[in-house]
Each structure stands twice: as C-alpha cells, then as structure tokens.
Length: 80
Ligand code: FES
Image 1 (cartoon, rainbow, N blue to C red):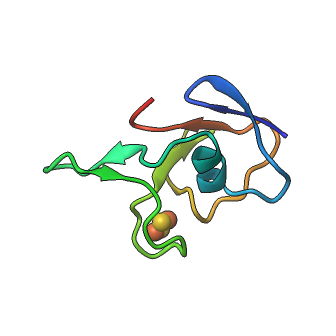
Image 2: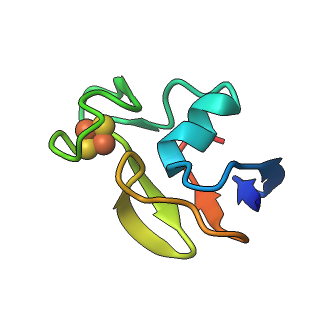
Image 3: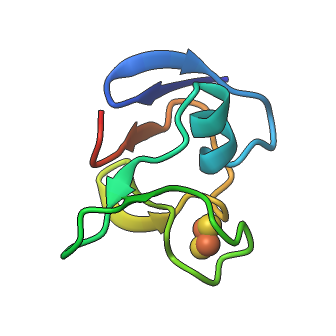
C-alpha cells in the first residue's frame, strides 16, 4: 500500500499499523510531551498509554499502535 508520512511517500504492508509503518521508516519517536519535551513513540503497543498519538487523514490523536493502515493514508507527526 502507499501511504505518506509527514508528506513523504512510503510503502506499507497490508494489515500494518501506523506505528509499524513509522518504525519501519526508522522513526522511534514522533511527538514530545507537553511540558518536559520528552520524546514519545510506541511504549505499551496495546492502546493503553497514548504515547503514540498521531494525526491520520486530518484526524488528531489517533493511537498509532491501534490504527491499521489503509491505502492512501496521510500520517502526520509532531516531529517530521
Ligand atoms: S503505544 Fe501505548 S497507546 Fe500506543
């Protein structure tokens, strides 16, 4: 499948999560904490911690570890 990550075209496998695509693209963090500015990416991987939030197709605060990609998804992170 074709997706974009911060505007950059990327390939993703059927059934892959947004977090999987970000990790496959070499990203280990993609946002920072509000007050301390600490990097965040996947922590729990099961939808509990909310560390992995991204914007998908204009919808903010999507848990990257829970959202399965569909062809054409536009993923936006806080840290391009
Ligand atoms: S990594 Fe914890 S909710 Fe996604």
